[in-house]
Image 1: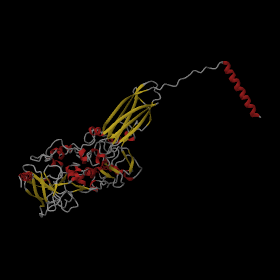
Image 2: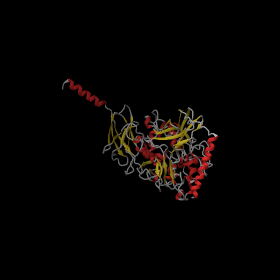
Image 3: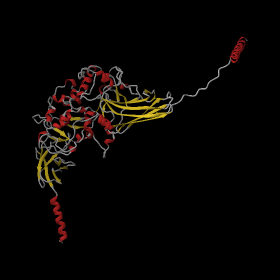
Image 4: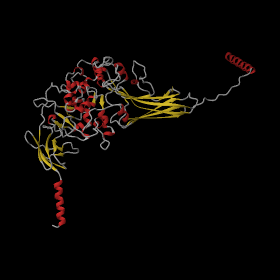
Length: 571
């Protein structure tokens, strides 16, 4: 072997020695049998994990210097007989480790049981709990608007107008508690009355455990939450504790949490458990936000792909722990998600929805074109429950006086309340409405009415909402025939988002949303000034008046004509 070959061999040996490697085996803690397909990684790292082979063996390369924590867990699968919580072991470069995985109990606690308050979680997750308290998920079980519509008990004026329990059979729950108080309704699916909930976790609404004890969401997305597409689990190990949780991270090794890995927490289908459902009896749509997302540009795999969580649970801006306890591992920003669940706000709406206004004169008409583009929302605008709506209002004035509309749409009936006629009552004005108006018979009896809530819906009266990535274009015409001199026309467009039908707001006496926000948000407004060429009146010419002689000749002629007609008639 010459000196060049010796040098090359030495370089290879040095490279092999420089490669940091941790090896090991993952086994079942009960029978010490190997666990295949467990996801193994160094805690807080990103990227794909290493999977154990059939003998439970794994090899991790590119190990950083010093001591690290190696974690392991298989993906949760309800069809598998045995599932596990995450296990961990400390290791360093060159170590061979042995990780044992504790089994998750196969059986769940029988009801009744008390899942506990969200404040239990706040002891270790103060930041997430604080964010959640500002969200619409918080206190969903006592949402004033929902209770007003359900039992008339949310606000002082809540008993006015439509009240579900006053108009339906005594045993009809309406399924409101299914999503608004899921921790109680999960114990007796579909049979809990929202105004009769009693558990602390139910009053919290869509609380921490309402999501993190959802073990799976199947493909039956048109079913209503745990009435068909969601699997809630409260494992029974003989001494109940609420801390059996599922989540999107496969390396949470804190033993008290008993964490299992469920990748659906990062998928839009997870949100579909409550935000996608139809009327169980008629099939009429309730919410179809997930289906809308599937049809959107954001659902296409690629650089622009975004799941629901990417918008509504954005990543943190800097690294940090996910627990407020001391000594917790520091995680990258993408593993630290907001729990405010931000939805429609003035900022998010103005960022997502674009309004463009154009106007030209065409002869004796002013022609206005308004384009509303759903550029940034991953679903229809508006989306969610059917009482959400938006209005486009067009105005055209000259010298402060409104021009008469000669063509185009007008704001539909739901732009006004039936009992008022104020500045917020906009029905009949030039413009357009964006909403899905459901129709049906109340409790399946009587005449068909609109709009109705999904529980009374038998069909869709109209759906003018704007799908993600699409533009709605509408044209409005205004009469200029009376404008005789050159002047300017002032044209404006307002796009307004309303969280509820105007008539419902007035009837119930609502002044703010249940969280204290505005009921109406101006998404955008545009204005322009357009020179108008006056249309002068047609010229007139004087007609000379007849003289006295001409008038006498005309009278004599008419007399003779009458005499001649009379003689013919007597023959």
